[in-house]
Length: 514
Image 1 (tube, rainbow, N blue to C red):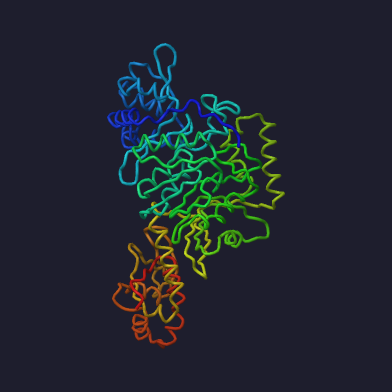
Image 2 (cartoon, one colour):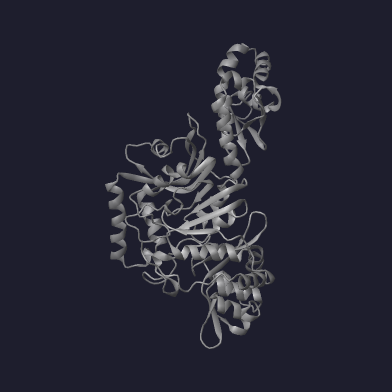
């Protein structure tokens, strides 16, 4: 393994860290306090990595302004001004601050306020300038702040990390694994509902940062282990595994935080394929991933082949980029757009050469959830869903797999003997020409979770509308057959397929098995 530096990082002395946390709270250096100080436009700009609006909003000399400028904007502060906001001696002794000239101090790490799901005040610790997005904004060639190699940088909160936190199943578990922990945001969430949390990373700086994040946020200390993929937990199993891995499909492995170092999407394939061996029965593995769209292959079938035996899977593709868009995105992330034209063109060429050699025509972005069901006929669903969803989705994920269990164990006769309930906040839309006697079609639309929409015929709309859990599906169909003048036997024969689709997509929830 490559030897990397862990210098310029604070230590998580419990007493000092507790006093620092108290000072941050006293100054309202929280997600809500930050929004109140900066205002929505500057707050949003800071999330995009733009600091000028925040600098303008923090020209005062109050404690909160001082903390924002120190920890988020990387500006030195006079020692006296810092002492009004922080226990300066503790911060200097613990390495959170270092002297800057004769009478000033500066931060060694980026500390970003982060609101927990139940209103908790947390802080995510990362490298300077890496609180959001990638490291593309870090000036200089290969070195980041404090002389840290760019490949060793530890990123803070970004869109990918909040997406994973939002889709993660949050039922209480005994054991959880955060594979590739980075700054520790997933481990921090897991600590709220898992008795035992293990966090791994190839980068020792990341393990130190994760420990600081949990300590500063007042969470129990996780079991931190260094290593690649599942190597640090060989022979161990968990109830829940989450991973925001270095999934970028790139020529080479220049940046540890994003490049997996394997050909194509092999890193994500390996994570999925080996997950079953590290899951307890009924356990979930949830990860973000990129995958190749290979010429002549269906991406759904390709990803379905990754799923290990005995696991159900739900694979959701949220976005697709052609290879040129994809290369440009990650060239900017690495700061290569700041290099000279010839160097940039050479690196761009290398990406396109790699894709051409692998017959890759596009790259998909999305999430993969496995559940170790042990089923002989596993449910593997791969779908494209680029539309807005309602986060958090953890309950939606568990509901999906419960419904798959139901559908797998109920034939048509059992289905018609089951009582169903229409899901909350489902609306019906009728589409057709103005003034027409009958609609051309009817659409059921969810306002929660995945926010799906599906076409149904008049029988399907009528059936869904009266599903309140009081009558079995078969009796509802018999009543509808009488209303529309259709043979009830034929209606019972042709309707189960439509009911199964409504159950699978979450419009109907089974109340009992009849």
